[in-house]
Length: 288
Image (cartoon, rainbow, N blue to C red; front, side, top):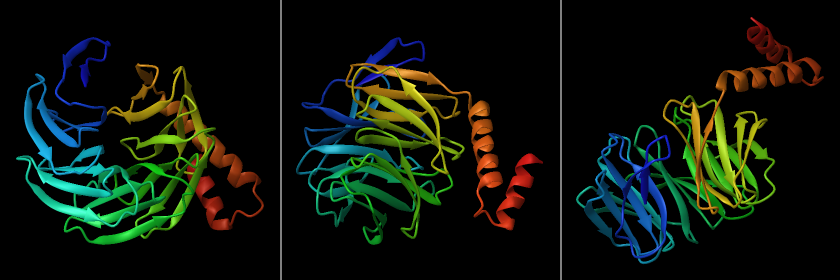
């Protein structure tokens, strides 16, 4: 693991894992970092690169790690088909078992009361913290590689090897498909304001979408598979990681992108003969 400033200067190396590091997450207070690895462990570090804690208990590769919003617990997802919940002392609090294949991604709801997990069994599952299954999200036709909650906690986005991103409500109903990548999608993230979604793909691009599934922007420049994407907390930049051995930082002109989204919606509402009168009122609000 490496820690960088925004000028691209290396601040710190984190060494200690004995195999690939698949996932990294900052604690909400920004003072510690958790990492997940093929060595079957999660590790907790301070920003000086000192190891604070080992989390051992998974029986296979650990693919994903996430902090709870209050920073007091950590969830990890593994090739052993489980999600595990830990306290910061490395004590196992809960096992989440139910997936029939390896678990690729895990995310906490913004209120910290539920956890979403994505799996090679082509599903997303929603759990409470007692490990009880609340909901199945079925519809992908390949491994689900990434899952993310909207900032308001009301919707979930999932990315898949089937080349799509899907948007769901918490009842498991499909709200929207995002199609446009030419290869498997590896990572999905919501903008902090919840109005746009970024996706990363093996097609070497990052794409930015509005919630209606309209492509707003392509980010091209990587020379290898793009495996991860994340928004800055202020929503003005996107970071992407790639097999080309680089991380790239991209600027967003969100005002321009939102304007483009509104222009697309105006065109749709104006020219689509199936739009209802109530939907046309939305057009009036936009123009107002």
